[in-house]
Amino acid sequence: MMKKGCFWIDIHNPTDSEMKALCKVFRIHPLTIEDISMEEQREKCEVFMNYYFVCFRSFDQDEFSATYMQPSAIYIIIMKEGVLTFHFKSMPHPHNVRKRIKQLKDYINVTPDWICYGLLDDITDSFAPLIRAIEFEVDSIDELVLILKESEQSDMLRRIGYCRKRMMGLLRLLSSKTDVVKTLIKRGEIAPEDGTRPALSKEVALYLGDVQDHIISMLLSLNHYEKISSRSHSNYLAQISIEMTQTNNEINDVLSKLTALGSILVPMNLVTGAWGMNVQVPGQYQEDLTWFGGIITTILIFCVISTLLMRYYNIV
Image (cartoon, rainbow, N blue to C red; front, top):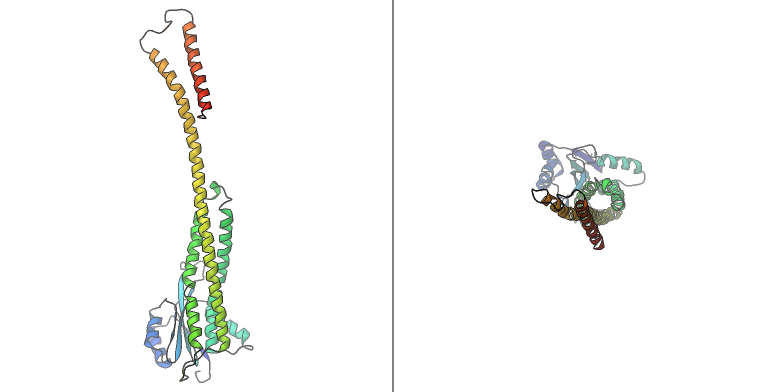
């Protein structure tokens, strides 16, 4: 297979014995074997004597999985004769690239560097649907946060928090990819003197530049959506604060009216309570109601005057 030309071996969840055998056959450096066996998550591009080693992270795309959106790395070894890929979790990218090669086999020259480009491009494209979904969610939140009433905003804060959490997860996955692609282009264009390591063709270098542009565009979009989401979060909290202030003002208005009513009733209770004791009451021994009517009239006049004064000073 190695004598025929370009080959691609995709290894899923390799064992230690398989790694040792592959290391011996393909002359893989022990540091590379260690990174793969330890499932190194740091994205990077390293150059060795006879191959390039690329670590590129994807994510679990199963929405019903408990590990959805969790990062999973794929390790690519690009040699002059072919490509070795290693991954410890099931991912659709190798199948998608093989399908793409079958469709374009009459129009492209399949080389190890093109296979590497196909994997990086497919991983990058897998982020596009998530970013579009975040765009729709951010626009929806930005419009609804100032329209919905308090009773309809019960889950708005949860939506904002979940959306920002997804954005931060995507930013964490995409932030280091530009450096990996840039390093691969920079080092791959320099042909080795001994000819044991492959050099990137100019066409593949252009394709990788396009992948880098896509990653930068996604990062800029996510940073823009993060700013919009942060503004929506601030607007939501400001609106909640305004609604709470309005509610407190209404409560204070009711309490002020109750206080004013109490201010009117307390003197009346004081007068009637004083005469409820065993004391002499004015007009106690008279058979007519003159004193009683006078006292009641005085109390009513006091109530009317107090109410007018409170309305004059906007107390009630």
